[in-house]
Image (cartoon, rainbow, N blue to C red; front, side, top):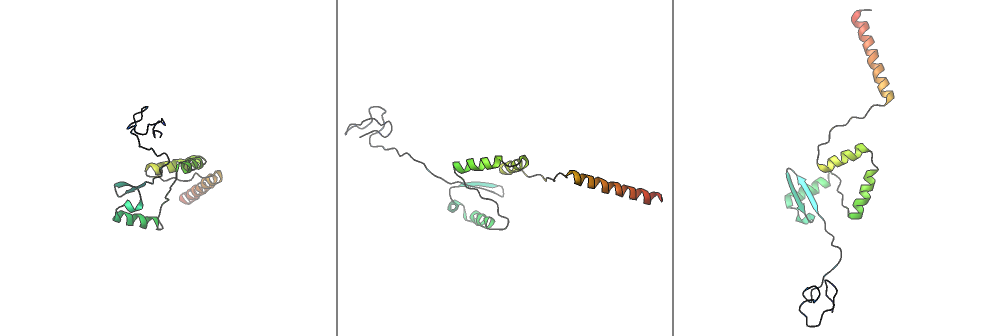
Length: 143
């Protein structure tokens, strides 16, 4: 028989491994353990749960109602490989989108952003303002 910790040979009646001291008969299981975690932050309360069934009933109703409504948010579930793929995809986004996303993930309140006008739009705004100024001058001075 072999030791489950160090792999050393064990005598049939040995209580412990002579190499590492591990109790005989203890077998170690190697593998991957998959878990899920649900983080809910609502109305100044936060909770971490292992499954939807672990979420308290009133909060579970809110969760189900909000994820099935028109105002629902994105729910992202990813393993390590999925997180790496998402990170690569996010790096391809424009800097402003990356900033907005990181602010949202950090819980920061989004600030309103206004699109920058193009050169043609800027010229149009200036021409309209100039025409309004000329009209005001003409009407106010009775020319």
